[in-house]
Image (tube, rainbow, N blue to C red; front, side, top):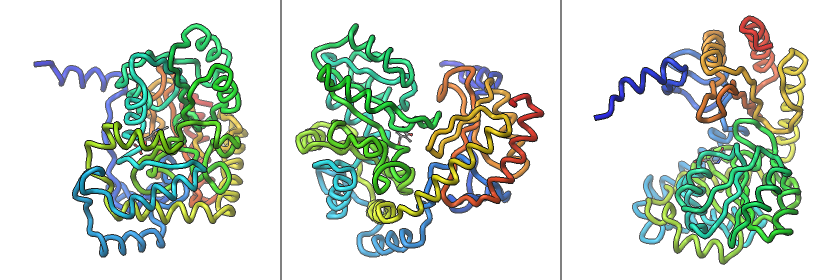
Length: 387
Ligand SMILES: *Cc1c(COP(=O)(O)O)cnc(C)c1O
């Protein structure tokens, strides 16, 4: 038997041991953990839709009408009219012909890549792409070529060297740990030049960027140039689930072959209805997004003026790079004592030596909350030598 306790103690020694913090309240800007109220900067609930009153009401109604469980997989007895409605809504939102909903974004990524690609494919993947993309690539058996993060020169060189019979370029739209945006215009140019299929994982872009909040692809006005639109229903949309949107043939093919779609129970009615309602709210709330953009710019500028190295990006994910895993955990713990919860992100989620506090903003934060956070970020950032 492998010696797991030894493996665990090695993780612990390197500051890489992980445990859960249990929240005893709604997923709001101020949450309760073990009886302690803390301001959270780290939730993916960017728009506060995890606990929007209208959405809660709609979900409750769905439970009364349909019950709590779906009772089957999608191709047997688990497809409700609601699933169909949601897939049509997503297709309309993303400006594609069709969409397919999965249990989570993770399942969507492994499902689409492993259904589409095999050992005859070459996949060009950004080095900082989400783990679920990497897992999908590995599962597919395709040749995986990772290019330097957002580096079009490197991607071009790698394409020239490795181009195969069938090829895919896959990238996050907004990078989950860095908060920067993929150079989609350049990627599309390469896709056209070399006839390569493109896929964008827009887990973090929806609700934040693009026309009516429809995401990063729309932000660049490339809706019909990206072949595979992937997204999640669990971040801005505030519910649970993932999806692939694209041409009819792609979606029909996935419904027939994608194992993480087929061999699992479908999403329950209350979650589906929550997503439907949330997309409605996002599409009809440009003002909310404008205010949010204002807050994002302000927060980034404040951090910069305090001496933190942050980019002037327009996304709510603001990494505060610390360096070593141990020091990052220490910083996060000190802040927690002050009533601020910013998760420490360490390898393997990010490269060694770039451990960070991953601060993420919510449209429902107040400026007062954020000023409090800035004060202690500065105080302990100085003390720990981060700034
Ligand atoms: C969160 C995330 C996923 C996975 O989505 P879930 O719905 O949480 O499984 C995929 N890709 C990226 C970039 C993500 O940030």
